[in-house]
Amino acid sequence: MLKGKRVAVASPQGRFAAGAALIDGRRCLDIEAWGKHLVYRFEGELALHIHLGLFGRIRTGKQPVKPPQGAVRVRLISETHGVDINGPNTCEVLNDAELAMLVARIGPDVLRADADPALAFDRISASRTGIGLLLMDQSVIAGIGNIYRTEILWRQGIHPSVPGREITAKAFRNIWDDSVALLALGMRRNAIITVEGGTASRARYRERVNIFGKTTCPACAGPVTQMTLAGRKAYACEICQPRT
DNA sequence: TTGATTGTTACCGG
DNA sequence: TCCGGTAACAATCA
Image 1 (cartoon, rainbow, N blue to C red):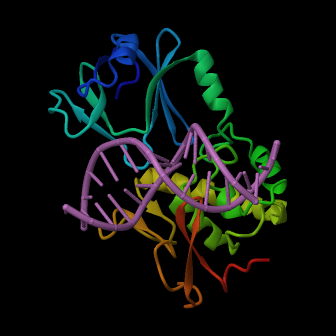
Image 2 (cartoon, protein in one colour; image 1 turned 90 degrees about the vertical axis):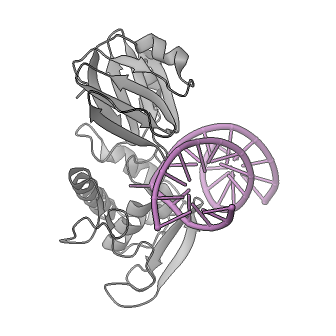
């Protein structure tokens, strides 16, 4: 809704005044993502780089735009629409060189057509680190978050503690393909859905999953173990996901 | 009011 | 150098 339009920028919380001035009045050329990083490209080789982190939200609306709700860090306004970015982890303006540095440190993004999965497998197959940690390392593979990590490994029958170097090329290919399918579905449905035939539920914040946050494995009815990986909760079925 | 959380980074010690 | 752990930060909702 902003693409191709000249954008006025406001920073209601006063935290973005310097960067906002750089892109104010410029045309928005493109909106693109690398992993969880969002980039609004503007005329003059400038890009607005957003990372929503755990809590960030993007609110969109038509003109006339409503008053800012909560901690709006930047507001982009065109003739027809407004976009508010609330509570992002990152909100900054980058030039082309800075954007190139950002993209260079992000691993292949499972949702990008130009992604090279071999780059991810090279890192994984050379590492002693558990695959559960590696899938969360955005410099190894980009786009998978905490819920998807647990769900993908369960679907593939691989325990999160299996070292990267023990992941075969075939197993990696399955992880990659499953990630592409699940994240693409999630994007289409605007919900995390990892259950076959699942639909977005209002019951638990638009997610429909197999074992994340569960205590019983839906496949074998065995107990689901909870662990902490990279400081985040992860789950596995010790029966369906053998450690070797 | 409290606690949990779809995330990242810096820093430290082994 | 690699790797794992911890803290800090952030905003919202139940």
